[in-house]
Amino acid sequence: METDTVKIAVLASGTGSNFKALVEGDTAPGVVDVLVTDNERAGALQLADELGIQGKYMYPGKFRTRFGKQEEKQWADFLLSRGIQLVCLAGLMRILKGPLLEAFHGRILNIHPSLLPAFPGLDAQGQAFRYGVKVAGCTVHYVDQGTDTGPVVLQRAVPVYESDTRDSLAARILTEEHRIYSEAVKAHCEGRAVYSGVLRQQKE
Ligand code: GRF
Image (cartoon, rainbow, N blue to C red; front, side, top):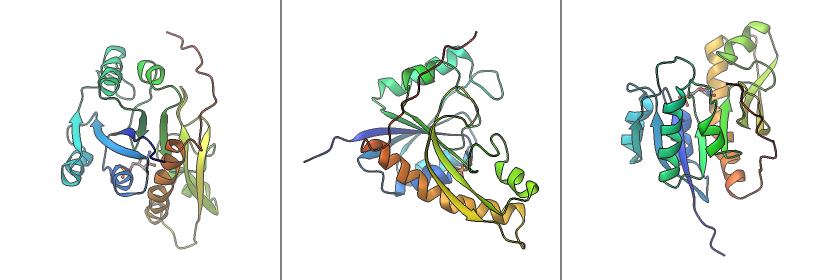
């Protein structure tokens, strides 16, 4: 039986290596349709060009770590009008607050470079390295209003060696990120991963 395609938008602010992994990985029946960025200089835009995927910059508003409310609505409207069914955050340096969460409730995934709930937030690899953990890793989870909270879909552990630096550990984690993101997206698109959380009411 033919399975319907699931149209995916990837939202990224930086290099875009996870975006590339999603384009090149097996996410079927999910297909990456568009890359949207809040950063005109994002490497992900250049990658989109090379990969033959439409790349689009959209103004995120005047804040640094979240969207302006009006701008978040514009992002949501753009994705809805394009028929996007799954949103994958891949290094988007902003917290979603309202319109995007409402428009894509239970249909937003994120990749984070730690074994959540350990080390949420910025520089998770550095946090883990400085803490001295012996096992680190990465997590794909559904997105809710929190920072790196939301139900876990997949995790993968990597060892931390005596000889590691923060950057060598980050590189080992990134290799696994590229693997589990496609696996988790595929699981969602096939209906094997489902978000069962309830969207809490936002305070203004
Ligand atoms: C990755 O480490 C990802 O886990 C985090 O942001 C980074 C993005 O890297 N959310 P890239 O742009 O995909 O290379």
